[in-house]
Length: 158
Image 1 (cartoon, rainbow, N blue to C red):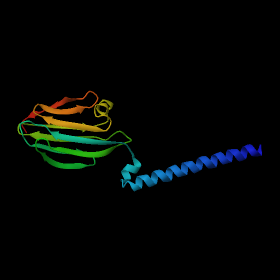
Image 2 (image 1 turned 30 degrees about the vertical axis):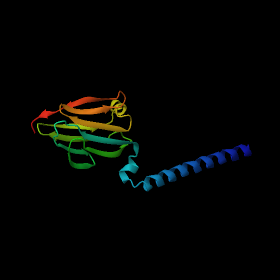
Image 3 (image 1 turned 90 degrees about the horizontal axis):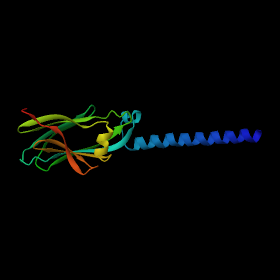
Image 4 (image 1 turned 90 degrees about the vertical axis):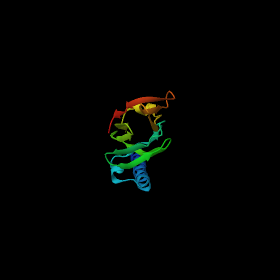
């Protein structure tokens, strides 16, 4: 009986040691990657890259202004073939959302470019969403089938 209790105590100590090691290691990793307090409270679960491309064959300048609840990525003026990209980590609450205002000479749109959606994730290959502005609207590169999908049409005017 004494040997069994001693074995149980050894197992408990071993598991407690592993738990403490994991907590300290996770804490060091989080601090070493220079994340914010919000990232510690709501850790990132996956890394993503979003790209917006000017594919307007009319050589128009594409105005792009993207943001999330926490980040304003600034205004960009993209010429034909130019790209604007950013990287981020989706949080554990699956509440990460980015949207953009896009405008060209004769049209504009407000569009979500990242949200928690398994279909979007599949189309983006679980890591990169590439949005291309074309004459008739905004396309998402569907890496699952290897082609652009028209997801949003331009609104006329400003």
